[in-house]
Length: 245
Image 1 (cartoon, rainbow, N blue to C red):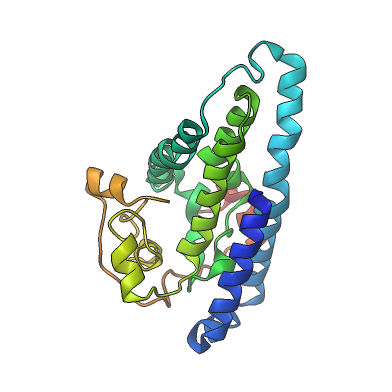
Image 2: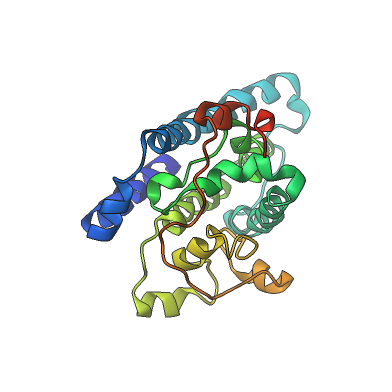
């Protein structure tokens, strides 16, 4: 189900973005290195990362069967755990990546000059395996008797991640209806800018940023968000800790 949700979300946001002339021009202004980074990221997060839980959980069932499928939770509780609690854990996960000593982990994701749906997965290989989501997915699939609604919460989170990075400016009515709870694409554009890098860390909800004083409603133009470095793209993808900061 999650793959279907993500496929249609990605497809819809891609079409919406390409129908807008400014977004379309920015998307196709990518350099060869930028396309390499984004396509490699899409492969890592679209193929490799989703495969990891399905390879790991059978191993846990085989060698650690005592807790396999032993927790039976209602669908509502499962959804709250994955969509709300994991979201709060991600808030801190993300803030830690922004600390100076760990910035190399997250640096590549902040190298996009312009946010669109293709920039969502621009990460180094190591980053994908340090996000709380992949480990939450493994734990949920392993411990829960039926993890359907837990996985649905994660699937909606991943869809919102695509939306948040789409750079699509929301209609005023939609913004007013959702911004009381959710991090909007405009607010995440600010997070990807040099002036707002320490603001709006949240994924699904803006509540955590408001609770911890890191929220900002300010908006910036979705262009020239970060400095483009001359670092080797393959080093950034596979060995970012070896690259000079």
